[in-house]
Image (cartoon, rainbow, N blue to C red; front, side, top):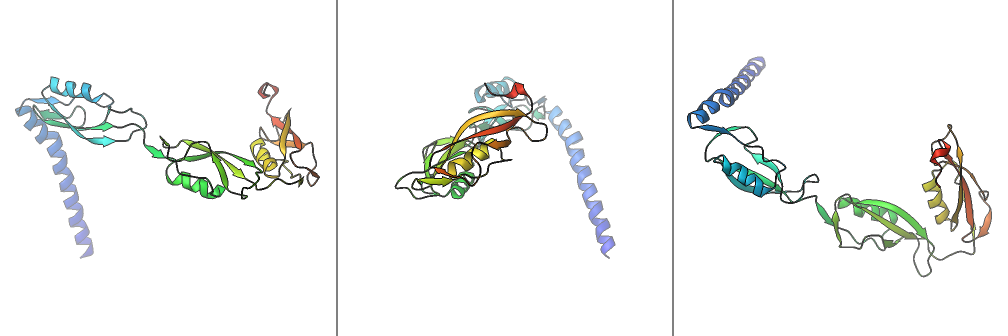
Length: 247
């Protein structure tokens, strides 16, 4: 019984596909030809006004079907049309056009007072990205909270835009301990030094095929050393060849 049902279902599906193909290939072309068929112009990526003129020139009617965000086409350009380009239709047929309203825009959320992780999640939830993170010791500020953002809250920006933040490390300390930044990237090393209350000093470069570019090979202050707050730490960083050394 089960096999019989499956066979019947297969026959029905095959018959349906054949009818659809027959309609598109034979019936519609014959019908439209009988009524003086014409091919729908391709209005995609044209301004709406231009698209309307193209359609009216061959006896078709342009209808605005709606709007849609599109990162590749600016406001006012056609992103979709129905019937599709080159489809045979009768004269006087309506062609529905969907118009681009440009790339989607969102409001920047308020990040001040949030933790670094919560700030990242807040940006991600509206389609934005967390950019550079700087760390500062600041009087009268709680540690581990955002105290500054590069784009003001409620400002409207394009989706996928980047927002940088500054995170408080609390009150400055008189003495701090030097962290190890060996084998870390230059970006990660700078972040770790800032979080420790130290400053990035001079950067020297050395060719290396053993490590990836911008990997820290050496630091001027040994890890574990206690030094005054704000002390500078010089770094030795890898490059693939000397031509890549910044001026």
